[in-house]
Length: 153
Image 1 (cartoon, rainbow, N blue to C red):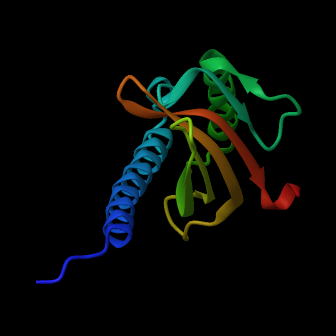
Image 2: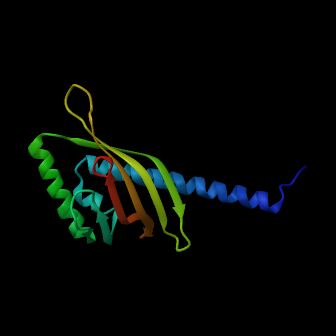
Image 3: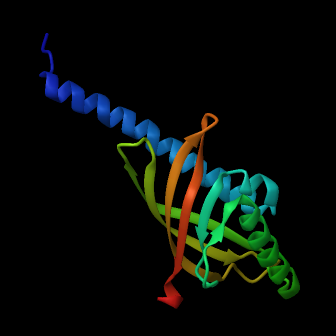
């Protein structure tokens, strides 16, 4: 019977722990985007910390605190209702970097596309989303999010 050297066993354990963490983060984003697409404003903002900062691509000032995120999201939803669009989101190419303080720095691509009744689903925006996730009350929450649209670079 062969036994892995300690450094190999430790690396294997760390890679398994990271795989579990990575899957949790993927699930977090999947849930967060489904809530957003279902227009669950209060539930979606519940995935942010109370003092979260959101740096969206269009306004000049960051949106601060959960109440600010609620106002920003409602204003965006109202604009979309007026145009008749129903956006949906897809997140991929996820990079997760654990930090010494227990937070996670993540970066991913996000597609925002329209889901009309017929005729396909055109892509509205291609974005890069950079987050800081923290564990609060037993779950991951967004403490900081910066969204950069490819067409506004």
